[in-house]
Amino acid sequence: MARSPVAPSPASDEEVNNKDGGIFGDGDSPHSLLASGGVLEQYPGAVLLSGHNGIVLHANDQAQPIADLMKSPGHEELREAVRAAIMGTAAQVNPLVVTTREAEKTIERAFDVTVLPWSEGAAALLLGRDVTLERSLRSALIESRQRYKDLVEISNDFAWETDGEGLFAFVSPQGALGYTAGELVGRPAAELLLDEDVLDRDSGARSPFAAQEPVEAAELWVRGAGGESLCLLSTAQPLTGEGGVWMGARGVCRDITQLRRHEAELAESQNRERLFSYIVNMVRRELEPARMLGATAEALMPALDLTGTSIHGFVEGELGAALALSGRAADGNDLAALAELLSSEKPTAELQRRGATILVRATYFREQANGLLCVWRDGGVQGWSAGDRSLLDNISGQVGMAIEQLARQTEMEVLSMTDPLTGLDNRRSFIAKLEKRFAAEGGSRASDTGALFYVDLDNFKQVNDRHGHQRGDEALLDVAALLKEQTRAGDLAARLGGDEFALFLADMDHAAAERKAKLLLELAERLRIYSGDADHPLGISLGIALHEMKKGESLESLMRRADEAMYGAKRAGKHSLNFAPAFDRRKAGQ
Image (cartoon, rainbow, N blue to C red; front, side, top):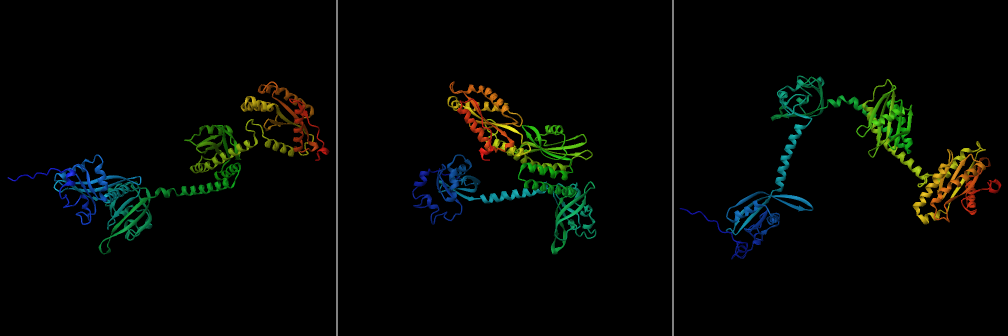
């Protein structure tokens, strides 16, 4: 009775390396496998020699990813194959997927690995073939086939094929024209055609379904399953057999019925687009935002056959006065009511009231509503079309930007002409307004009089030194409030800088100016609470120069006289008033 072979006991790695004569031949080491003349020198793939406990005894460059895998935990399938080979049983690991990091990228490589016994169970020889490219190509091919299948099935186009008798031999699985694929297959394609111009009933010439030569984007009308007329755009190729015998045709059709039915709407849309471009170009030619808005309002009037157009900005969340108006104005209450209906989800609203049809469109800047574009027509006119609304939608972005630019321009103008602490006119604004007033008066109001007050604080430095600048600012704000309280419509109040203020009081003679000055001194007693100390009470000194238009005094001369009078009040002991001498043209040299 034959005895079963007994697998050799595995040798240790030390035994493998120290075995007399080596396992690779006399005097050889594991490294001689790939050495010149070595057994596996010409092997094109990975070569790795492993001991029974998984220690890598040798690996060429191609086997380095497998060697790294042997050193890491896990991968029992590979370790089990090595143990089996050492025990005398060859094994396969297909595929062995190795993940590596190269240039900060994770890369997967795949190997088909054959594991063989080596040197009487002393080691296992691993021969690997890199199949990464093959796997990628196979995967790409499978994906490509599935993609083609999916596209055919989900496409709005439908593919078809006819045979030599003009019958449908194939139609896309989803069917076409309201028919299922089963209802069309075996049916004569010519029965679907409506357009006599594209079909010779006898020969089938020029029909894509019976194409004798390639057809590119042929347009034809066919009958749908419900009897409706449908327009198809078709591309086709003839099918031929041996000897060039025509055997049918193959092609793809797309339903373009909706496109053709909307041609009139598209033409209208193009006209709207041209109008929009005209309005945008008109707006862009205007550098001033106010004129931009005005140009937009004017252009909309004939474009939409309007009775009126207005553009409004929001001021602290409330609808402001019209920034631009063309035609007759709509009722403000109606516009305010419509503004309340608007939201980010509903940027338009309309209302029919008192024989008028009003449509409003919110304008936005950086996703924040900043205004309203309002258009209206008199009664008897039908509602607003989709084209009307589309035009307003398109230009609302331009209008929103113009409203924002106008708001910023207005803000900058206010800041440039206003004292930032007190809110009074600054020196520049004060002088500009006086110059405008003098130029407007001219000779038509030669009897007009006025008084220019220069107001300077007494002992203001001690306030800052003793109580700090914040307390000093509070004192300046109280002075500004006092001056505002004593001005009327037509009067001017300004902070010229530091602790210097000015008033111009219109229609005021000497007696009235003196009464006003004494009242200011009396009211200024309230400033004492800001004083630095009892010996240096905070108060005001007033220099007053009377202005008579008939004398033709320049503004520069008037301001100089008021300034000199104020310093005269300072020299007289502070907290007092002083009138400048009357203007004398001869002494002034004007």
